[in-house]
Image (cartoon, chains in turn red, orange):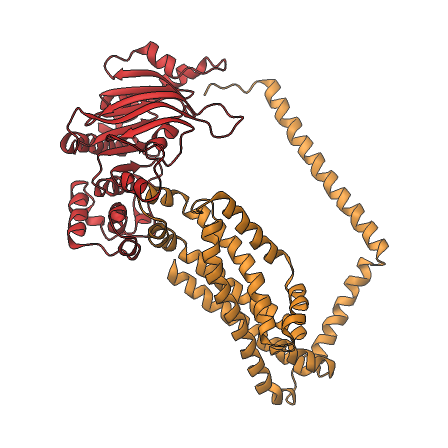
Amino acid sequence: MSLPGSEILNIKNLSKVYSKNDAKALNDVSLTINSGEFVSVIGPSGAGKSTLLRCINRMVDATQGEVIFDGQNITTIKGKALRRVRTSIGMIFQNYNLVERLSVLENVLHGRLGHKSTFAGSLGLYTEAEKKDAFDILDTLGLIKHAYKRCDELSGGQKQRVGIARALMQNPKLILCDEPIASLDPNSSKVIMDHLLQINETMGITCIVNLHQVDFALRYAGRIIGINEGTVIYDGSSQAIDEQHLADIYRSDQEDPPHQSAQATYINEVVAFEMVAHA
Amino acid sequence: MPDKSTGSDKDKGITILGRRKISIGFVILVLLILMELASRATDFSIANGLASIPTAFVWMGTHLLPTTQSFSNLPTILSALWQTILMALAATVLAAICALFFSLMGARTVSPNAIIARATRIVAAFFRNIPDVVWTIILLFSFGQNMLTGIITLFFTTFGMLTRYFVEVIDEVCEESAEALSATGASFFQIFAQGIYPSTIPEVINWTLFMVETNIRDATLIGILTATGIGYVFNLFYTRMDFASCGLVIISLAVIIISLELTSGRIKRVVV
């Protein structure tokens, strides 16, 4: 286990081009992330947030640059070695990405697949200890009474908690969250973000969270990485970020003056909605 | 959103709608002209065609109704029908198993390699797009007039169809969950067994049952060419001008297919 504060992820000059004619999805991104950090990546749609996250666990292969995770260069590893690295990186998705026709418990246990033999994993032969772990995790996330329900019976917020449980089941060092609350209402969003923060604080798991909602990012993350058109615009503490930084992060090349105000209106709406929801 | 609908925007909306109406009218006009030209070229008159429908029904009513005498052929018909059903079942099940394997290669979300995926889809399209009658005629040369020719024909077309359906189902249903499973470090077989199989099984059963139904119909037609099953029996009665027995064949086919449809409907409801 890496010590808190030690370097867990080092991204060096990462670039990604999807097809020759397209602009770079990532342009020479270099980042160092320490163990135990709660980092939020913000930026407009299409800025490269998802690509950055998927380059870290190699769901997307970078065109250039290196990814060093927990002291190991994982840029070109393949097959079994890659699967082993992925077991220590959890991932949470905007659309939850559960196997909807299976039960909550089965979905949570999927987090163990990478640790098991192909045979045992394929047949779903989990040990008693693994099942006990799954129930413990479901208990912490308040899902214990839904354990045997099929995932398609759950609400969005509950599904995302199953997603978190599946990631925790991996016993990860790092959790990547790709827009975890983009499809949720403000109340469920708060529940999910609270859980992520709790996981980060109590278990010391590093979290990198892509967010659309600036207010959530500022409230939860200690560190903000602002991306626009594949380039890191801002990288620093969430306290130090100001209006000008946000304007730079969300600027667009097209003449689009209402954009900034639209973002501001959106933030106000969310805050207003939350106040109503809490009242 | 500020209200921006000024007068000019409204006008634009109206002209777009108007243009759409004109284009629909134009398409209908072109179709009518084509129909007129085609019926002149083929000496087809719609009026005569419509007028002969009642006569056709009268003929069917008088000739195709089974008589008591034709019921003596029932054992022959039923055993031939059974043969045809088994032929369709054998071909469909075999094709479904192969198609499931090939669709894993062909589906973008799980395929090991983009070139393999494309090649698989091209092979499937090849088998699918050659009509079964053509397959039969070609295969008759190598295998002769027997059950095997029919089974191979049905296998080829069903394999082509099911591979395509399964590829679509996998890409549609499993893209996200397969991504999540591979992000946990799961291997290909684990992703298949724990993600793709449970997510797609209702659709796989659905399409396979559908293909069983169509294959019983197609096996009848193929049977005429390969001299097997219900198609052969039908052809025999037909050339003997024993139309009452032909009618009995049609009725028993219809009964089988409808009851199959009802059963598969029930199966589908259980599996969802």
